[in-house]
Image (cartoon, rainbow, N blue to C red):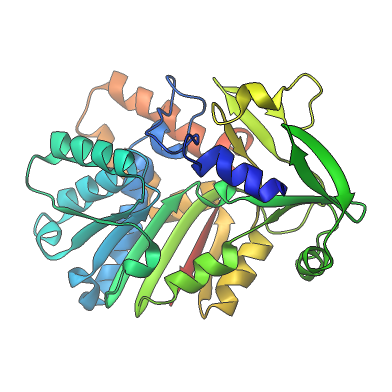
Length: 327
């Protein structure tokens, strides 16, 4: 089978890795910015609030997270919006795009534990179900989990019995990769369809964070994460049959390809920058300063360490990027 089919079954098949709720953080296979600090979500919400102040009609719009895991990010955003203007959470509507029923259940349980019955969440199985006038979409680390094809030297990867085989590449695939200046590496499948489905919303902002670069490296980054250990896909010691559907598989996002897909779907690129620059611009340092006046020194220093992880160039700060599309 094609590698994209294999990866899709790995992550989203009947027994796929993401079919059921997965722990993140210390108890899981990897950390994310969301699991690192609640100030990540607070910073994005702070930026959203600035957009609301410019265009008051957004006060009655939707805040929707795509691929929300347990719901930490959305809840952190709601919490911050309530902190700066309590009445705002009464006019906004909140949603999550998530098709896995078991994950939906875990999200609703977490949100109920955090807010009781004060916050109502609407689940959408797919983006194209969101038929509203305005939405602020947010996501974290979703594009690195889109299935991809692997190419090199005019060949593409196929998988037989969990063994990768290289065969002559399909002409259409090579032409598609060439359009995005790729001759080697991961060719994401599905960005165009995803962007097109989002274009059905009348008006929206979409902010997403992920790891990768805008310029093509033309090399492989695909890897497997298990219990906070990283294994390159082509590592001779890695046995695919042993990690298949039991560990996470991911690769660096080609942001150049992603941006082109959204441009073709009618979106305007409003911003592309490192996570560090984005979070600082969104106000994470100001939020930390406010926090320092309301807590103990020990709690403040603990949060400082977490924020260093988010913005330090050698950790998450430069490797992760923020992209902001507007329609």
